[in-house]
Amino acid sequence: MKKSFFFLITCCVVLTVAKAQVDIIQNIDARTIQNLDGRWHYIIDPYETGNNSFYKNMEQQFKSDLIEYDFAESPTLNVPGDWNSQNDQLLFYEGTVWYEHDLNVSLQQGKKYFLYFKAANYEAVVYVNGQKAGEHKGGFTPFQFNVTMLLHDGNNFVVVKVNNTRRKGSVPTENFDWWNYGGITGDVVLAVMPQIYISDYKIQLSKRDNKNINGFVQLEGHQPGQKITVRIPEANIRTTIVTNDSGYAVINIPAKNLHYWSPKHPILYDVFIESANDTVKEKIGFRTIETKGKDILLNGKSIFLRGICMHDEDPFIPGRPRNIAECRMMLLWAKELNCNFIRMAHYPHNESEARLSDSLGILLWEEVPVYWSIDWENPSTYDIAQQQLSELVARDKNRSSVIIWSIGNETPATDAREKFMEKLADHAHSLDNTRLVSAALLGHINNDTFHLDDRLGKKLDVVSFNEYIGWYVGLPNEMSKYKFKIDYDKPIIITETGGGALAGFHGDEATRFSEEFQKTIYKNQVKLFADIDGLRGTTPWILVDFRSPKRLNPAYQDYWNRKGLISETGQKKKAFYVLKAFYNEMEKKYSDK
Ligand code: GCU
Image (tube, rainbow, N blue to C red):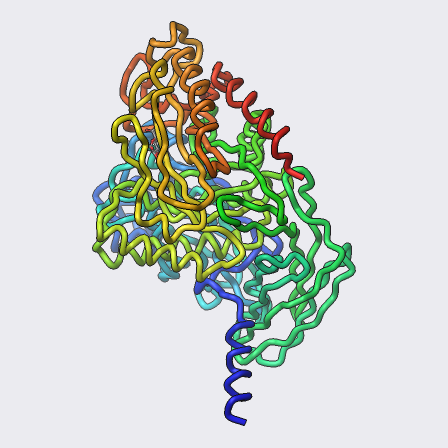
């Protein structure tokens, strides 16, 4: 008796699929929502004068009243949109900006209301009708607040204090090589939910078993014994599962006739999740991703990741993408390069890009901004890093395009960092066992040998590193002397390489910032790639020139990092065609199946 009881317990534990402790409504755009995007009033408040008053949004009642702000008379900014690209005074601004927006709501009995933000950089404090709804730190992931008790039937107002000041203890910290775009950079919606609703779900193929769909559905509110139906009509799949005491139900469905998702065949299925009072329609592709020795297998077959790095910035109107067209433009540039893989650097990108990549057939590396040296020994720094990772995984865990979670970039190998990063790697693995975990590591050069022996590699499924031979190390015409020594029997991805060039500036291969200098680096990098045993992917730095407050050479840079293969005006540089030719070769060798 005792033995079989223990076995039962174990079963329950094993069957439970990991769930990030993050309360965001999955697939918000498929819900009943009131979109609050548009023009929001704003007040620039460098001295935080408004902390104890602006959230009340007071208006002058009597002519003697002293009120030293007035949202209604204040200018407006677009939401979603960073403030830097909308007002020249704010191009370099780092500090507090207050936003205000009026909204009319006809309250429905028995409904729950959530104010949902897709992203706001960096800290956001949210008030509804003068009452605090909540606050959030982290500039790139979604957050929501239950505002059911704060709303009035009819006119309401929302005030949001956003601050993008760089701080030692934040993630990223004070020093980074991209523009610190501030503001409400993602859509804002008011979600109208039934009392008991489907708050979260994960529906993916089991790791290493492409004949089984595994996952969970979470109902908001502890509703035991609730029936939930999961239907995938095109695959002739229909199953009914029942929630446990905490409203959680495990999915475990045999799936015999699925067409697997791949870059060549980005097949997405309509998936319906139905409970007594709620239904969500989702689009999901089914594929497996795993490593085997030094190989990466997609749907059980070896694949070469023909990649490129990308920042989340529209170069034409420099700023965070405001709409799906801007996101699509960047992804199509990568397709033009014959990429099947993109490294979304160095922070979670606009959610649309992962959904678009599902349908365009692009594999993704997604990353949290644990970048360079952060405050490793500060517990709240670890908490915010882990929170951002949990929020990212919660948001994109149903995306077939996403194959790798990255826990950071170029973090120096110290004991404190290792403790921090090992914990974060374990957290990533605990959140999602269907994908790979990695980080962009640093190596060191000894006697013309690039050596990678970073201890963090032991915690990662794929060992990835950045190397700038020919740009930061040596010159283009002396690259052939370099060798690589990688201390791991794992698949390898070169997550950054390359060099800068000002589009249209020409010279010989020794002229820095000329297209010829960059082209030569790429030609020689491609040769070096051939010598690296276990190289399963490359994501050179970077698809398109991007804004950086660290790039100050007036002639060649002028606040742009020029390592793009495409300029900020959309001009393709010579090196673009070198990498494209290499990827055409690699596609012949390892087709995407
Ligand atoms: C670093 C870093 C990037 C940076 C790039 C560069 O490796 O990861 O964020 O922009 O190199 O120097 O251009």
